[in-house]
Length: 371
Ligand SMILES: Cc1ncc(COP(=O)(O)O)c(C=O)c1O
Image (cartoon, rainbow, N blue to C red):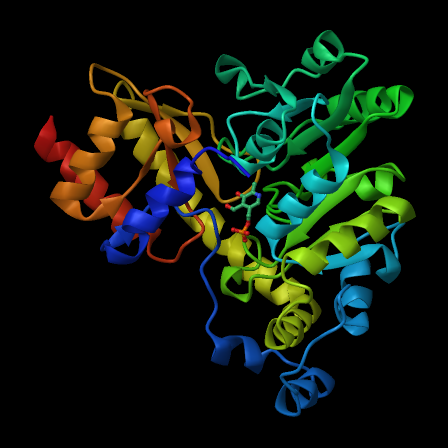
């Protein structure tokens, strides 16, 4: 398999674990094992303590899938297939696409959402938002670009990296168009439940349409990326069975400890998500104030959901130059938009972490000293 370098992942591989601060991570504050276990109910604590480290069921533990199904309105535990989030994207693309298929995918974005299709010989049209209109994704792009060979629409809301959330009317337009034309929707919902206004939360695509596939997992909203646990949900039985069988060539089954720990987290979801949203709220008010003060040099469209936003850098400097100078002089890591192949005038900022105010203060000091 020939595939282009995953630029964002290579950037993090080079820097993430040897910098003082990361001001660009997309996950919420990671929980410790001790903190998570404190939230366990009696049944799941007992399951954790008596856990055997053998193989697990390929679809995922039934109790975990039942808990996951509670996040959806029209899907059941039988519609849930557990795998690592990135693995879920890999499995779904391999099972949905063939050479020559046409794909429409939100952009800029998490590279595997469109790169896997390209690597399989598919043609991909990139659906980009309008920065001047608050990162609005116009659904007419889809009707203008759809072709007889369009097999898949890939979307990701809340969106990495802009923090945009599609409005409900546009979502309905996309879902209806896909249903009318027999196009499958793959909806990456990995930042779900981090909508700043719960009224903006879109339905899960797997609930809206019986052929759509939704992706979610523990990495971002729950701050449990180290569990490496996510899931695909679809009511399309034939596709579900093929994706389940494909997993025999990836991980076969998920790690037993991660399954129990995910069950504990899902049962404590109100506490965990509430804590993460509170942290995001605190950080966003600091960022609002920061961008107001730095107007002229930096600007942003405040996000509608998720834990990241895309910031525009005004002036002469490119964002790779800016980010590497910030890193060198302060030890604060920021991701330039070149990692998304999205020009040289933006960078991504992350605000799901407890230490964001310290990292932001260092960036502030840097800006004072470099102006
Ligand atoms: C939109 C999106 N989808 C999927 C993933 C993959 O999640 P994970 O890194 O937990 O495999 C990410 C990670 O950054 C992401 O941003």
